[in-house]
Image 1 (cartoon, rainbow, N blue to C red):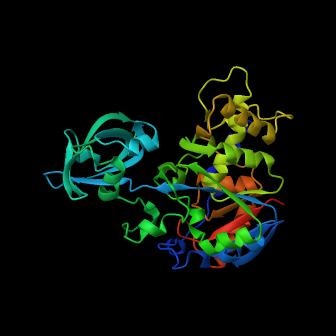
Image 2 (image 1 turned 90 degrees about the vertical axis):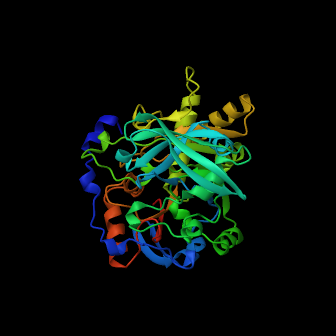
Length: 409
């Protein structure tokens, strides 16, 4: 599919009526009691998530996104009484997530700012008590880029890390479409049970259904599992606002994949089933990173750009196996155990999946890039059949809602 063909994709064709009462405002008490819609060979089966292992093909490899949601919303109150919200999107300096969280005096982030008109100049300051120490925590706006801003944070205790500050001063950023404030229980329910690596501002929500019991059942069936990291940005759940998909600007996200995972993907003979659209985007991005590394004149920037999959994509002899081998060769050459890269990939109808054989995913917002990704996987207008069934049979939608298992015909 060429980039020029994208002008034929109108976002209105990926719209549907989603009543507010179908959006799950809270999760179920037991994660794996949620409903599961299974789609295979044009047939729909209704089940529950705890039965997922029964539907996963034998000898499958499942890939999970182990990112952890940070308490990214930080509130300040000016002496005038005005409340300013700073929403930390991604680290600016240091731009490495782990290094940034470990800073003990100052750091800066790319942020969105709520009530910006009330913060024209000066520093925002608040006092915090951390580990029985009272500190002064300040925020200074240093640069503007479109609707985002660079904010420098500073504090006067070098025994306290920025990660500790967010744990005390920050608020978990649950999706705005839930139309409610963050509650204490969200700190647990809006994290997957396997979350490890801090950095996301939104949860990889397909993973919210998994429990230790489901993992045990997968293990007993002989299903292999492994993990990647994609830190989910705020743009993931943002609806497409342009009429034509080609005019939508996709957000970039940080990905990290260990060499052992890439080797397992290369050697695996069965189905590869990622959990969530973030894992899908990570796996499919590996193909294009491998393609970059296969080019003699490739630069050092390992980034998959938004429309790269649709530019000269028809290389008959360049397989997913070749891409993965190129990545392993690159890691070995540079004595690296982990691939660190960036992806802006957008997956739209007409996309040719390179690595993924199935997807576990929730039910997504109308006119969203996530719905486009699902439509690209199941082809044609089959997404409409699935979503109509889910609405007719009382499935719960969006982040805290039910899920689906989509398998290639």
